[in-house]
Amino acid sequence: WPRSARRDDGALTIGGVDVRDLAGEYGTPLYVYDEDDFRSRCRDFKTAFSDGDVYYAGKAFLCTEVARWVAEEGLGLDVCSGGELAVALHAGFPADRITFHGNNKSVGELTRALDVGVGHIVLDSFEEIARLGYLAKEKNARPKVMIRVTTGVEAHTHEFIATAHDDQKFGFARETALEAARRVLALDELELAGLHSHIGSQIFDTDGFELAARRVVDLLVAIHDEHGVELPTLDLGGGYGIAYLDGEDPLDPKHIADNLSGIITRACRARDLAVPRLTVEPGRTIAGPGGITVYEVGTVKPLDGLRTYVSVDGGMSDNIRTALYGAEYTSVLASRRSEAAPMLSRLVGKHCESGDMVVRDLWLPEDLAPGDLVAVAATGAYCRSLANNYNHLLKPAAVAVRGGRSRLILRRETEDDLLRLEVSP
Ligand code: LLP
Image (cartoon, rainbow, N blue to C red; front, side, top):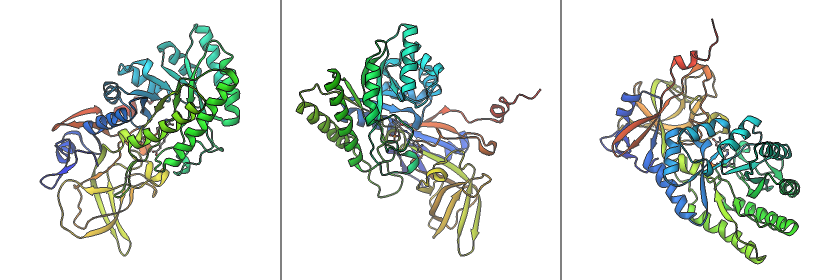
């Protein structure tokens, strides 16, 4: 739950605002962001990595307002598409504090990145090295680039969000990364600024991050030995796990920072190399815990001897993580207190398939009724950003709460938004 979550007269409040008032003013489903929670997590990372740089991974949740929070807290921004870049620029985010990622950036996207002068472009394939080199030469530009390395680390997380094992699409395997460095260094129009690694997401075990750091430093040393260059940046990506259920224990940013910078510093000093600046790119850890989703209950259907199906007014269009990754969430009755006995429940959406679950197994009070509000915790990351229009549902609004006040940061979609895409006469 967000750091400011309280139960005052029975209803849940976030940032000093009662969820019943939020539902009344903005409707449901509703994403609610505790702005102070988001900002304080930015600061926790910034303090922990005071000798390095922290880039917020915008894929977790991005809108103009959030880009502004990130800029004000002094973090950089990781974007991975022209769309994310457009939102960042629209927010006035300084281009030189943006890193541009992606395994298949288009010519248009790369051109825009060069035109606006993004700080770093992360190269993911041989084609991209040639493509960016060509574009940079044409524009007489010399962008700073990093090479994305897959370290062969098997991250302990869901298969779809592990990104550094051998059999996947990202980056250069260690053997080919040296060749990538050769090609980049051979092009005057690209400035090789560092190496990048991201092993996956929602990871609790520090071993994988440490192993990846060691392997990336080995490569840094190998590049030095071959070319005599000392690369100034080492970007180790994001991936730090957050608590979705009671008892899960998130990693402490300070602990991560100390471990990683210790590994890098020791390895470089042992070879008399300058220690590169450490960069990390947390997304979920910053946006996740401070966001909740508020839904209204529409139907309560007890199935004898099985469980009770509680249907809410959203579902897999506003949170696809349960269906896609088997993600687990915590949810509570948010609009009042209840002393009723707990009933085994499944919180489901309103989409036309049985996989449309928000929370697969949970206990809700037996007196739960249509009109009650339920809140799902830790939905700040990868829920709005993965939202879709399945069954032509409208994407919910997002609001920020702080100091007893709320304000809209993304408006709810309307049917007009859907119809605007139609090309009928
Ligand atoms: N840097 C890079 C290059 C990434 O690909 C990612 C996430 C991050 C940083 C941020 O990782 P985080 O700190 O948020 O774990 N949709 C999935 C998560 C996909 C993550 C993709 N890359 C989910 O809902 O669990």
